[in-house]
Length: 103
Image 1 (tube, rainbow, N blue to C red):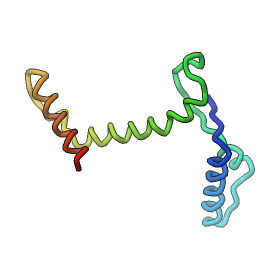
Image 2: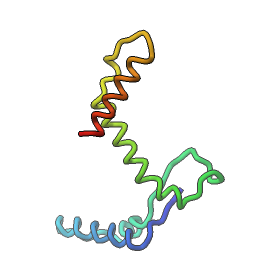
Image 3: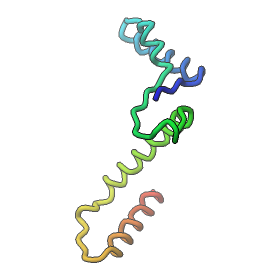
Image 4: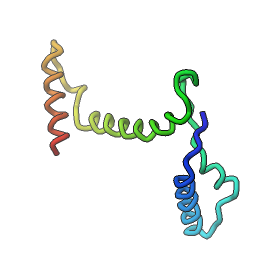
């Protein structure tokens, strides 16, 4: 799926590309500046289920969720918990997660 960004975002992306190229003593190509208006998504979700507009809005949220999960994996040593029942690891992880939120 291809999602075209709103014009203010496109202008900000192009401005950033121009500044970056200027630092290197270059100029971005016309094709590169045109591509900055679009975001391409490869997904297994069918078009009938999800339209393109919500996908453009959900994508940044997805990356925030990915970062949260990554931090949980770093701070919660799940692999080192050795118990026979489900309850102790659950309460341990619940408490650790609450501590992370409080920090």
